[in-house]
Amino acid sequence: MATIKTMKKNAVTAPLSEISVLGWIRKNLFSSVLNTLLTFVTVYIIYTTLKGVWSWGIVDAVWVAENRRECFAINVDGACWAGVIAWLDNIFYGRYPREELWRINLGIFFLFMWMVPLWLPRVKAKISIGMTTVFLYPFLGGYLFAGGEKGIFMQVMLTAAVVCLLVNTIHSIIGVFSGRSLPEFFASLSNKKNICEKTQRNIFFGFLAILFVLIYVWQMSWNVERVPWTKWGGLFLTLVIAGIGIASALPGGIVLALGRRSRMPVIRVFSTAFIELFRSVPIITVLFMATTMFPLFMPQGFVLNKLVQVIIAVCLFNAAYMAETVRGGLQTIPQGQFEGAHTIGLGYWQTMGLVVMPQALKHMIPNIVGNFITVLKDTTLVSIIGLFDVLGMLRSIGKDLPWLGLHIEPLVFGAILFFLICFTMSKYSRHLEAKLSTNHHN
Image (cartoon, rainbow, N blue to C red; front, side, top):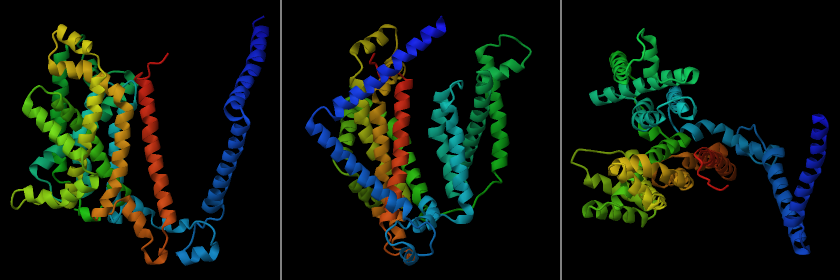
């Protein structure tokens, strides 16, 4: 009897779905003579465009050649991807020494390991993992990328970064298989039952202290060759500048937004002036000012290289823009949330950190990710002030003697590269929106 009902249900559902699809097509594409005409014209334009791109970029393209002249000799109508393939190392790594590329790859792998726990559902303490990623990974990645001599401060921070990476990895493995945190796992190894939270914390801190001493002693003999910043370039340099800008934009924007809403006149005026100043000028002006004006404000004998100046400028500029996004998100929170938090005895910072800011950030996810994408694309402007980022390397292909005049294919490849990165960020933001239930429609 159940089988007969299921067959009847499927027989009714299939035609209804087909009718609904046909009805949607008829309503939206062929509802009138004009819409029908526009539909056929649009389909023809899309077909012609895709056919031309497919023929130029795939069918008639040249993938293996020694120079541009040889590409023309093989097929003059197709794309010459051989030049892009020959420059792939430069596009991704710039002029970084080829025998040291393992350092960049290792640094990227460490970042991936550090961030994987944030995507695992059973792992606890994700906020702490995220904070260590933002504040400690730059020391580990920076030393791998730059190398050179290590001072006492750098040795301490590098040790702390390695300790956090190991602890986060162990903590994540334990969380995936048992659902417990690392302190809880240590407590379970003891014969005593019902160990208090304070004892768990003391055991965990003791483990960290022992691990810190061992790694500090080990890293004292670990040195990598110094690679000057002038050798950095390509997509690697773009991601370094954009990554630091993105990591600092949200915390800086939150501080500036709260400062602009402050009741203290000095803080409010300073925050407002900072935001309006950076928002009133284009980023290229800020970059030029950073490379020419920053050295004038530094103490005598203190020199910042151009890359550090650019990173500072990008961080300040994007923090100002992010501040307005955060302020807009805070204004969406009803006043009753503030009053309710004060009623149960929460102070200002507790109210902001536990009640208001988590709700505001969920509303701001699309705008925040939009700002992050803008940061990534704006980093291409550093090529104007002499840094060979990915855009600078793509332009250099057409100036290389074997590939002289090859401009279209490198720029198309760069457009595809940026599209893939930005599309991935956009899709992840949609995933976050769905996961955090930011869409309240029924």
